[in-house]
Image (cartoon, rainbow, N blue to C red; front, side):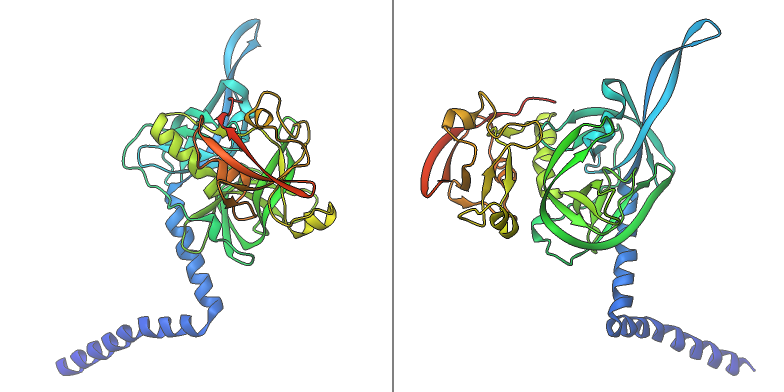
Length: 360
């Protein structure tokens, strides 16, 4: 009887030991199952560092004839931890929901919550940095958005509709280097340049949340959706946010170098539409209420004109993968750069000394 029990135990152990190999073989032979497993793993890896943000404002309210302080919820959004001591990256329009009097409550997946301090808002892009004061916090790994190609699988995670924390939707990269005008909560239009287009559903409340790849690395910051186009969402490339992160870590504030132009990144479609002589570069063009060349800027002092096409900066070519914004952000205020420009049928070289982008 005892031998039979041992035999049964040994058989069971052998069967159990064979399962991992069977699962691995099934995964390798079934690409859909492999992607599903990768998706689950990526989300699980990222979630501990993703936070929901509730934006409130304390105002004076008259109750029973007396003025009392009352906290009013103004909106919500998402962010993610980028340093173990509590720096959080999110969208500027998330923190702007309560103007300059915002109070920001941060909530982790675990249920732990904090009040955060606003460190700075990016004057150039729809980004902001908050901070909570703690140590050894979980962080999320940053990827490289320049490696993205059409068809790359991505996952958007966020506080959907301000109610469903850490909701995840999956899709693909369906466009790169998009330029669009987005309306904020105050009805003001803002130009978003060089953004990633995805069909992963991005809902209100997802703003500021990460767009991750199947390795759980952040490749974008969810920023907007096309209200008229179904599942069309947009994210700021993480490479465009890295100078902001580095600046705050080194200087305690966001410092952006400025050339002082509005532009459109040229691709084949834009070149055809506007009958341009080149299919790469940056077309200096007015956008919304922003002039093509800002008065008193380094660009104006360098003699850059509306309609010029910037082809290169310090011999680095401009294209959809290396936008004007990305290249300029590699430099510091007061640095001199050389620009190769197409003006009509001529190519010219001009020098410009960058200054600092003013705060917004």
